[in-house]
Amino acid sequence: MAYTIPKLTDYSAAALEKAAAELLSASDQEWQEVRNEADWKALRDRWMARKNGILTLVNDLWLKPAPKEAKRDVGQRVNEIKAQVERDVEKGRGLAKNYPILHECFSSSVDITLPGLRRPIGAEHPVVKTTNEMVRVFQKLGYSVADGPVVETDYYNFEALNFPPNHPARDTQDTLFIAGQQGKAQRERLLLRTHTSPVQIRTMEKMRPPIRIVIPGTVHRNDPPDASHSPMFHQIEGLAVDTNITFGDLKGTLDHAMKEFFGSNVKTSFRPSFFPFTEPSAEMFVSCFICGGSGKRGMDPCRPCKQTGWIEILGCGMVDPNVFEFVKDNGYDPKKVSGFAFGMGADRIALLKYGVDDLQLFFQGDVRFLGQFA
Ligand code: PHE
Image 1: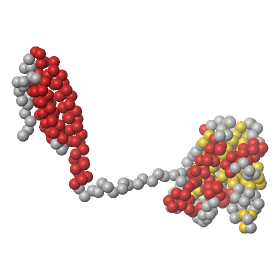
Image 2 (image 1 turned 90 degrees about the vertical axis):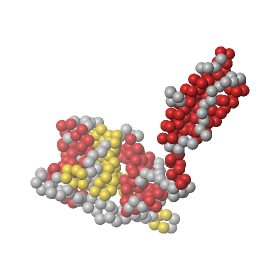
Image 3 (image 1 turned 60 degrees about the vertical axis):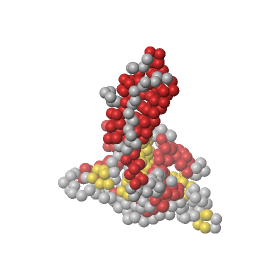
Image 4 (image 1 turned 30 degrees about the horizontal axis):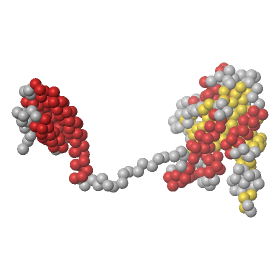
């Protein structure tokens, strides 16, 4: 039997108490039976409607006709009843929302006790990690990070770096050329950049000296993949230009950076080399941080340094005046400024640092391998 609100004849405390308790128990009961939105709305009208809703009737049937002496007590009761019924309405609202979902879970074939989907957290790739660490070393020296496009023009990749058309030095950096550009002037033809050095020119076009920049990035070359080569790999480039920059600055900066990166006991060694865009040019070696420079590991030969005690890390040199000529108008008069540049292979450094013997492992995406660096 649905609850109907009685008229009150007896206004004694006991009778009031009894009537209120019956009403509240009916409310509690009815709101617990809400199963959906429609149930909830129907009940809301039954209890809350301004016209003939139970709460309105409480006023009309209990409070209004109450004798003067009982008004205070009845009024207090009625307020308590209203507060409690409002709480029941909210409980009912929750049920209307959640019951259909719970019902679905418990009555369908979904097994809610099965474990959830695991979403593994990723980790930095070892090459990215190595790059970030090296970049950080130079940032601490005041260098800022610059970057540029991977699809580059012949001009920035070669010509402005003092590789004239048909210069034999281009042969060492063969790459993929974008097809169908025969109609364009050679300097505008697009290719996949073979080094991060074009960003030297791009940055000098935008920023006047003095500059100190470090340039991490992806590069491509026509190198078939093997344990130490890949047609795609990563470089970290550096460039410093100011008045009176000397080869001593180059050596001091790179020696400091290597000690910071590999540990304070490594030594550096510079040997003559050639790059079209630096003069003089050098290759920098660090003393082998695997065998400590001895060339031996116990009785065995040290493989990473091929028993020489030295590992080649990067190419570097003083910026060739011919390069400054290309950006002269932006304040790089070779008679007034000088600078040094360097470039290293991030993948090669990561290989050495982590003792990995096959470069291809870095690019195969096998999480059993990559997970070891997490
Ligand atoms: N760009 C050169 C290379 O890829 C490295 C280099 C950079 C050498 C800067 C000197 C100065 O081989």
